[in-house]
Length: 124
Image 1: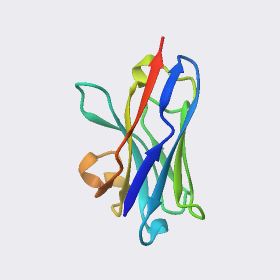
Image 2 (image 1 turned 180 degrees about the vertical axis):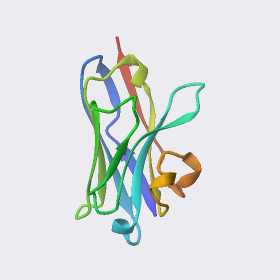
Image 3 (image 1 turned 45 degrees about the vertical axis):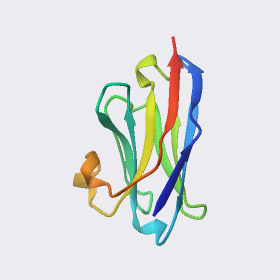
């Protein structure tokens, strides 16, 4: 499974961005997909995840109500819609794929496949 994240950029506080992650390889619809982010000098943190069917999602408390994860299995793409962005959202955002259950979704070791990351910078 290969993942390619895109859509990052520079945005002012309060603005919006939509990240995309194109997934290639076998059985895209069999994987849970997640987004993580890593700010400079900090650990990689969980942002959101979604089941293979799209019927269940999980969002970190820090982004709940502002970010929404979704997926399009016909296009093999997972999205992260980000609204009301804040300077503390500045980070490299990574998409990842997992075959593990929901109990592993917020854990970096729970994912076996990672994309290269896309930088989101939010100015104040």
